Image (cartoon, rainbow, N blue to C red; front, side, top):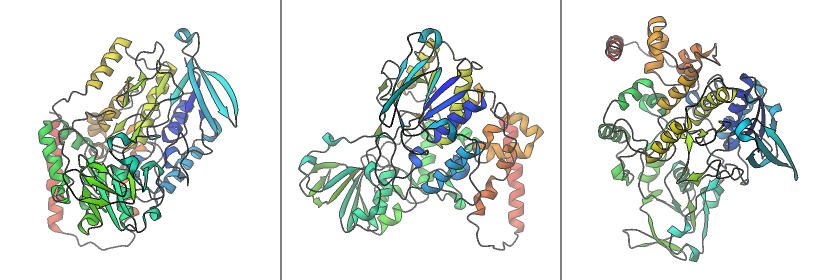
Length: 532
């Protein structure tokens, strides 16, 4: 059984891993190369090697009720979508609440993690670290890697003919901090993910002109969704997930397109995705359509050629003068402290069972936490991974035979669509609810919805039809939290508390009451048909 556990990184997954180790009686030591916790969510004026970098204006894309740790809600007075400075404060509250700081060694870089000579017997690892220029090493029974995948910028300059002749400024979005550098400039942003879209919109308030270049387009949604509710509290429900997964993929894609176009027609704005067969996570931006319709941002196709002071876009012969190019072209990831024989990264993914355990190791004593892209928040995802991992390390839960794990990993790499639901065919993508439910099943912590509908119907209905908030993951099993039920039943109260800051008197409507009654009857009928 593992006892001493090395944890690499004190970001959101690293903090959860420390806490999970402590809950199972393990002895964690977390190594953090910077001087503070927070990982991605800690803003710095300058880019730091080996850690994620963000710009000053970053706000969470997942709302506070969906992106908190499962037994530690955000403060009630926090906005629904949390600015990075407040997110960092939340992480510090979490660390203080569960007394995690004493287990973190700051300013300590992990240089290497290697198997001990007797690894096949003990499963132990030698961890070599560097602190203030001095190297040290220690033996650990297990290692949890929590370094994320947003540290190594992908900058494919070879794909842009003429870039070496460009006399203006160009850089990767990782280097971006403030929009002031764009004042009165002609700006080109390449890449239409969340960062690229954010930067284009920010630049448009100061720049002379802004172009946003995209090869494949994207669906764009607002954080403010149906009736003003947070988008992910509407989209991520067990009912909706079950409904989507029961339909053929073409029908789901058609319904998704219809929903995405309900805000604005993407084709009219040059944004509609070219490939609508595979899931591409929607871009969240509340301003982009408004910036396009007022001429502040111009959507353009891919780049044909870069010249000294201009660019030429594909299918458009006109040269556009450009002063600054921002490459929002994403990231690659690697584990420089691990030998390729332990974890090998190929084509943007690693051979990890359930995105966690190297399938070929004879001892399951190394785990990677947070190396996944679910259609949901990474915080409860990484936390749930850690809850399972520590029970495997402790010997309570067992992994299947190597052959079974390797077969599953290879099958996932083939990315064959099932033909139903959304198509999670790109590297690291996963169905959020299905994936977390699977991990919860391993630790006997998945809520029994059928039993709950009989014993606590109010809670059962809220869990099935309401947002799949992380508190659901603490209703039962190891790590059960007594406050979980109340947190679920009051989740909408916390959501509206920070938006309804002016009291209003709503007139009761007989029609609304009748509609609620009919809706309740319809829900009961749906439940009856589902469990029939």
